[in-house]
Image (cartoon, rainbow, N blue to C red; front, side):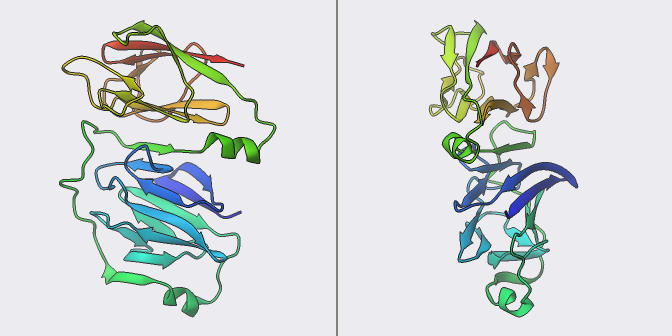
Length: 248
């Protein structure tokens, strides 16, 4: 199976198998692959199958999508190609690597013939987010279909501190946004509450928290990246404290 290896500063962050569905890439949690740093647009690019191959297409992003150093609009991927989006590099590993160099280049629609340097993001920067986030939105039913042995796990949050008008919050969605934003599943109150504090993602039987602002703590320790949640973990989100509970 073809896959993407997501790297940041040459450190592998994630491996994503590629199937029949397109992979939307961008800065917000709605994308299947969320690369939230200052150079990534909200809807930046997508990788999708076409025929027997995979293509990457730029979605009119502010800073562009690059393959092997060249800015592109649409590109037919070959085994070993490096796709650069903002600070991240996506290494494409193909199951059926193309060997015809000429035909592959014929499917490329370049923007510039020389290596381009991305301009700093100005208008399309994240709100109140100085940390780099990485999250992969994986459909729960897809995981269960591919791995029938996966045990369905139910989880919830107990509200230890905070005005949320409820003491228990069931985690029933694959993506649960937390913040003051109107679209957040868990809405925080208060004049100084950030629009986006973080995201809880369900991936199979596991749950992960990805912080979006500084100052977030897990079990009294400051965190800045993706964290796997364990039963009994305590999340401190500004003035709100939540206990994560997982039931099998």
